[in-house]
Length: 607
Image 1 (cartoon, rainbow, N blue to C red):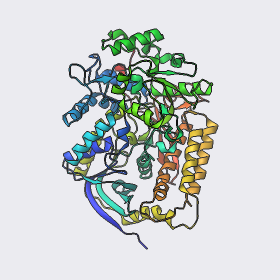
Image 2: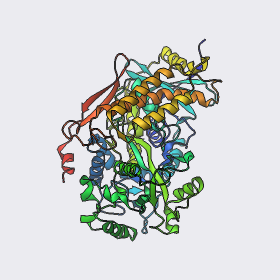
Image 3: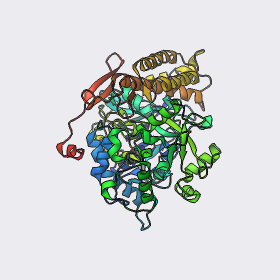
Image 4: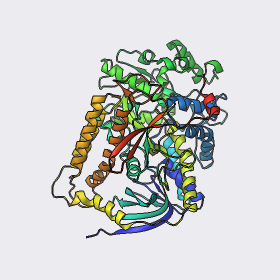
């Protein structure tokens, strides 16, 4: 018997209500499009609220030497020059305007003594560049965008999971979703769809991501025929909580180190001085004394000399460097009691300064771990945090390789290359959320009428309810646990061919097991059923990550191969690994050359 569903029609549908989705929906509505916003959780509960450090934008309010050209260069260097150069340029140019726009919409940023927006240091950034609100920047960003969105005439559908994208020929025609509370299905028809679904962190056992991050947008775009790129580049943030086990992986903001916190091993050594890579040596302090002198200047608000402004303590090297160093210390037996290292700010700042600059971190450790960070160090370790890979998009419009399908935020690939700098994610979602909304509205306005195939809708619904109809089969919880454990073991921070092959084989086994997954109960308020549906996407993105990692036989950015420890500047320097589905339905990985950078931008990278 056919399962009933309701229908609705809009010009633009935005899937995901984090920063990118809200900004896209605001822009689409501003352009006159009838816009729907579908969010997996409640409005305001998006993972963006967990972004703590700040928004990276070359506003020059703390150091006048900062500008978009330096921000562009930092972003390209952080991404190991694998970034979509046009996206990196647009991001660096437009980020300051997007921050000022947020301020005009009511965002309240921390200020300098003379009233300008305060900006803090962050790993990989040459100058203090992160506009922030203590360590709760993401929360303020969502508050501001949400307030703007609800006054923009947008239809909002909360606690709904999208299970598939419908197509009319080659173009997208909408999506199918179900209400997580009631289990009722709904088909959304639209001329353009914007994916803003975030990341893939739940494929890994230790992660900083919220429960929604099961790779929904990546997987649905892939199954709809869109290209994915750079899926091998998964960022492990160097500082997540490691104790107690119930909170393992929860993020400890890079702002702790930006405010002066330092990393130490169990011997009390600031071990990062032993891991300064040669390529960063010119941009970091060469001695601890020099690093401390620089820190004192910053804390005293003394503007450093331009010739030495780039010098940073090694604790603030890019995230991939720091995560690998921590991993090495732990494996060498110099870790903390619970398998991490120590992050110490208590010896660097007064208790009053810490509570003022890092109020969330103070409460987080006090309430969850029983640690007073104003008096003792934190135990931290790497946690799966962000994926640089995602849907291949046009830099200007955000449209994917499938007509009418757009993407912005973490689900979109290209902007960050092989490794994302801290703070660039919030400015990324503002810049490209707006551009995706603008592009989707323009496409909807100029394209013809779209049809929606009822057979496709019925197919998605049938696949979704199949686990409920089975009388026996494995539990989705068992499959999810086995998948995340395998990804952690075989496709983690340090990789090699035999482990990646083992991981890929395990994914293939679990995909076969998943075909018979069973869930008891009905469709209403059923977390097991919700997970069974999420698992389809988790298995897809896990395979894409593993296939990309096997193909890229070098170490670059967040992708480290034990069997290929060097960076291959001849074969892989200007190549994306593209993931797509072939005519037989199998996943393929293909090397794809990057576009040629313009001479003007290339000149900015010299020296």
